[in-house]
Amino acid sequence: MERSELLGLSKTEIDALLPHSDPMIFVDGVSDITGSEITTFKDVLSQEYYFKGHFPDKKIFPGVFIIEFSAQSAILLLQHLGSEIESDTIPLLYHSDFKFKRVVTPDVRLYCSIRLIKKVSHSAFAEAVVKLDGKVVAKGELTFVLKKIDEE
Image (cartoon, rainbow, N blue to C red; front, top):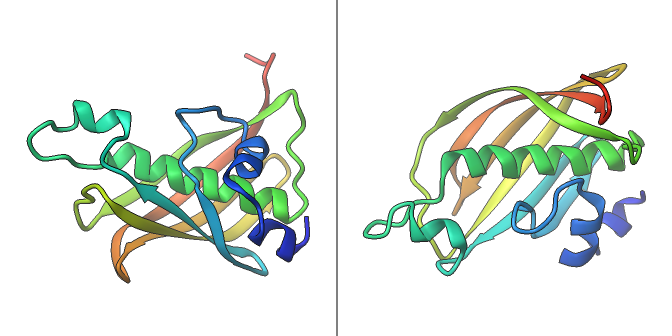
């Protein structure tokens, strides 16, 4: 996939590239992609379903969704770099090591920068930095394995 094609994708086209489905897709767009790095964004809106319970009086975007946003961004980068994900294969987040620096509340835009560290056979290693207003919200490492759906 060419750089310009990925930057111009609509939300619907991004949804089609990811192996997830609504409501578990957290990438809203791609703001930059160069070499082995991608920057995506997520609009965290107050009407989203998870804010009904997390937490009703002080809405906080769940940390696990920040990790998932990062993982989905990495999947888009892998696809861009030519790691086609076959229809019977899913990228599984095998391990994540994240540090959370700030709380994310609704009605903001998060940016996630992913840098591919290494891809070996059916595994990939990436670094993620998630920012809000230029300040780091979370950062960490992601390890993926590509696994056939019918494998145990």
